[in-house]
Every structure is written in structure tokens, then in C-alpha cells.
Length: 415
Image (cartoon, rainbow, N blue to C red):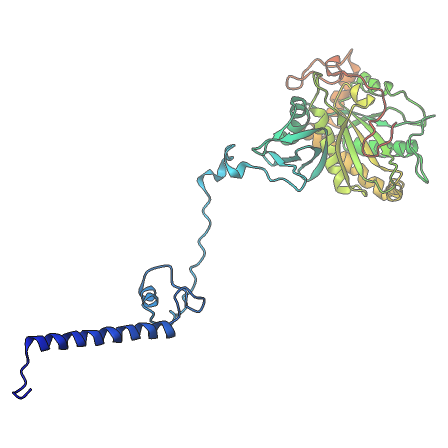
């Protein structure tokens, strides 16, 4: 080419194409460099992204490192707010209503009323009332809502008096103490003791304490003699007694079994039952459980003959096991026996409630004077106790067959 250079349109297009190609090659090199030195966002080496959007979140998404924000003081915990439904029992469909089960699959059910609390487990006859063992006469169930399912006779005879804290509905003036066995019937024997002797010694000491508290007291026997079982409650009815309490010591094949237990008449379906029986036995056992050297063997239920025939509220106390060396030693100890005497007397006071004897200024008691006047009459008073027939009348009589022997249960001997 000999002439001067001319910038033609064709030449300009070629130059532009070359510049564009060079720029594209440069961009590919930058991308490779980025992949070589910048960690993959999904790898373990990459910093975790904040889940929220904000300044630090935007910086992380652009690959720019930012110094962490200074730590802030944690917010003070807010007081828990009680849900509106916390004061009312949850409905059957509420998860909170489902009772917890133990490792054996037994659900726990609770009945409460006022300050009293009865706790039972499904498929078991052992319960707890205010910290004292209760051995029910039958197993109970707990429904899906956590509520115990009790037969009608247990509701009336057991749960009712325990949860209401039932006490006497009228004056408690005259008591019949029944020292078990006697004469040719020695009862059980310990290594160094005979039951009939311990029963009588305890009854005599208890009688003195109750008289000191203002009660009139009679005994089914005051010496070593045999009194038939049917005759014992009949004496209490004949004297128009307000309570009948039979006193015993126990025996078990296993020498490690020990403790005090109190029996009330076991309810039977279709038969009349006074809830006062359970109320009396409960008050006695609650006091005994606190001081018995062998501990709490519980409130229990049986159909002993002296209980089925009693025409007034009645209970049978087993003060300890002569088959256990420690319990036998306590039964023969004046100090331990005194503690048990005071506990039984306190239980009677608790059951009598507002109707226990009140000492007068002259040193006598109002209730004893009334009791003597009633006994001197031609028969028992016809005055009812809050709609309940008075003690000493045939309307209090319990029905039901019994062979006069103890129910073999938890190592208890037959008597």
C-alpha cells in the first residue's frame, strides 16, 4: 500500500471485534481465580450464614468478612405466665390430663378435697392419703383422664371419709376397749412374750389415760379370762358405748415384718356400711404411724367378727409384730408402750372432734354425766345424730358373714 493510511469502516469493525474478544478472555480468568481462592459457600470451611437478613447477613452473602458484633447482655427472664386454664382441671382431650405411668405401666390417679389428698395407682390396692399408707380392700383403676375409678362401696366407705376428714356426728362419751384373746386363747407368742398379756397391759394403761381425758371406759375383760368373740361387741352394745376398739399384737412368718396397722370393717357390695368406721380407724392409724417404732403398716380393711358385729363405729389395732425382735422389745418397753398409748388416745380425740369430753370446773366432765344419765334410763336414747341412728340401737348393726378369723394377708396370722 503506497498511499496514506485511511481508517475505513471495515477496519473499525475488525478492531472492535478484537477488543471484545480480549475482554471476554479476561473475564473467564477472573472467574477461575475466584473459584481457586474463595471457599465454596456449601463447604464446611465457609462461615455459616445468618438466618436473618440485615447488615451482617448482606455482608456474608457478598463474601465480605465483617468483625463480629460485640456480645449483648441476655434479656432478663420473663416470669412465667399461668395459662387461663391452669386453675381448672384439663378436659379429657387435653394432654395435661393424661396421667403419668410408672415403669410397670400403672397410671397414678389423685383425688383431692380441701387439704386432703388420696393418691392411687391403677391395678393396685395400695394408696396414700396425706402421707399415710392405705391398703384398700380391692384394686382400683385410673382412667385416661387421671381420675381413680372406685366401686360405689369404696367411694362411700373409704374415699368419702378420708377426703372429708369425717369426725363423730355426736358426743363420744363411753368407750369399749377390747384386749384381744385371754384365758385358754393366748394369741400369738414372741420369743419372750405372750400376746394376751401385752394386750391386757396396754388396754389398762390406755383406759387410765382416756379416763384422765374425761371419757368413760369399759373393758371386755379386766383379767386373764376367755371372752367369746361374739360376746365382745355385744357387751359394748349392752352398755350403749359410742366406740369399740379391739387391741392386738401381730405375727408374721417373716421376722423382718414390723409396724403398726389399724383395721376398719371392709365394705361389701349390697350391704350397709357406716363411713365412721373408716374415719375412726384413719385417725387412729395417722397418730400411730407417727410414733410406732416399726413404722406405718397402714390403714387396712377386713371383716373380722368383732368388727362385723359391732353396733357402733369400731376399729381393730395391731400395735406391732411379736415375731420381730425390735417390735417385741418395744411392746415390752414402758416408754414405747406409753408413746403408743398417747397416740391411740390422740386418735380417739381427733375422731371425737368437737364432741370429745369437756372437763367442768368441779373436775368432772359434761359428757360423762350425760352418758351415765342415758345408761341409767330404760334404754338407749332415741335422739339421732344428724339423722343417723344413735349408737346402741339395732339400726347400727352390720350385716355379713364372717368366720371369726383374720384374713391371711401380708403375713398376718389367723386368730
